[in-house]
Amino acid sequence: MTATTDIVQKLWNLCHVLRDDGVTYLQYVTELTYLLFLKMAQETGAEAQLLQGYRWDDLVTQDGVEQLTSYRKLLLMLGSENSSLRVQAIFANAQTSLKQPRILKKLVTSIDELDWFSEHRDEFGDLYEGLLQKNADEKKSGAGQYFTPRPLIDCMVSLLKPQPGELIQDPAAGTGGFLIASDRYIRQYHDSFEWTEAQQSFQQHQAFYGMELVQDAHRLLLMNMMLHGIEGAVDLGDSLSAEGQRLAKADVILTNPPFGTKKGGGLPSRDDFTYPTSNKQLAFLQHIYRTLKPGGRAAVVLPDNVLFEDGQGRAIRADLMAKCNLHTILRLPTGIFYAQGVKTNVLFFQRGTTEKDNTKAVWIYDMRTNMPSFGKRIPLTRGHLSEFEQCYGDEPNGNSLRVDLGENGRFRCFTREQITKRNENLDISWLRDDSLRSGDNLPEPEIIAAEIMEKLRIATKEMEALMILLEGEEAAEAVSASVGLSTLE
Image (cartoon, rainbow, N blue to C red; front, side, top):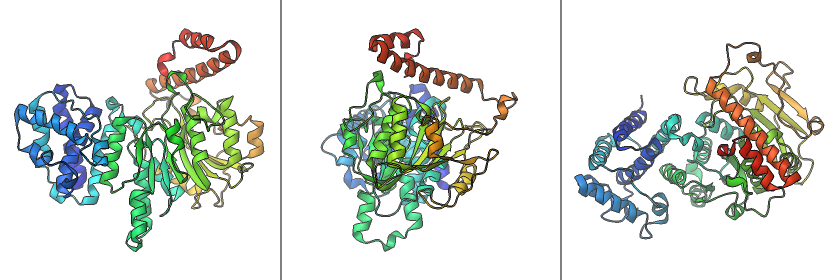
């Protein structure tokens, strides 16, 4: 066990201390974010960015009610306009969930007693990311919706090969996994010591940017980026609103947009989308291919319904394949995401220099059929993705020499003409599913139930869209209420 892993485990074990105080796992990680920010600022000599009187030593020397009162005031002051913009963003609307002074004392003392001296500056980010991983793995936390599995992130980044000087965007940034992995990849394959001062500044301040809607996730994101030495502009906001229109054109977009529909069934408040839709993934997909520079490339995680949804979904897929070369789809196995029952894919595409006929063929890799359901029992590793990476090839835009493995293989090619004959439906499978012939490999009952509910949700949305066309919105709402699925949105 490395020193970093050891500290992560010790910090995570402190969550048990908070159970009697009614603090949830996500609240616990948020609480740790505040305290670790203060401690790491002290350890790294960065306390100058904090107001005097509101630093780690000011907190650790106090006790009892006085310490808890001072801590509450500290959170308020660091989130005020008296602090730097980055500190303000991390502590914006910060409130403690702690009610008992002894709990705060335990946390502060335990953090102060850890052997921080053994940690190098560049390992603090890995430590914090380890905590985020722990939180995402804990089902009760609900934080998995902000956390894409790191093996999948590393796979997507390594295939797109981000380069120094490129603008790299994540419009649904979560806790920053794609941006941080991209920075790590660039520094791994390019000697940053050879960069000019201007290049160094670009990579630190401009290369990585995006947006995150949820404030608690945004707080964790800023802390994560700061500890990895990245200071790009990742704002708190909605990429599906006018705020998203202001995001700069990107060379690379890597993202995993949130699942579901726009709250209340409303449409994104964007006037630049040709195909308005309440389906957030289809809206994000439009944002992504419209925001890419000519020649820019993207990899995006999307649920199955994006591949087959009719109406606007069909039109958006056709528009995507006209404006971009949609060269590869990875059908992901089940169980790797927070939302059980939602089957997902990764779409890889490159924006064309023209507006039509950019997709000539789509290669699909089926990593789902006859694969285990991943989760705590079988965690996803980079090794599980190695065969797909070999099939994909070294060229980031899908131009490597590829081989169709036939009806019994996992990698196949489908021409644009074949897809047109399928009414632009990209939900293509060809392998025989052994689980249909044997009950030995069936998923857990809760996964089966979640898949059924997801299919019902999609069917209901399609019924609502049809009813709106035929009889208006009131009839559609009645359909939704009659099947009792309004709470699934």
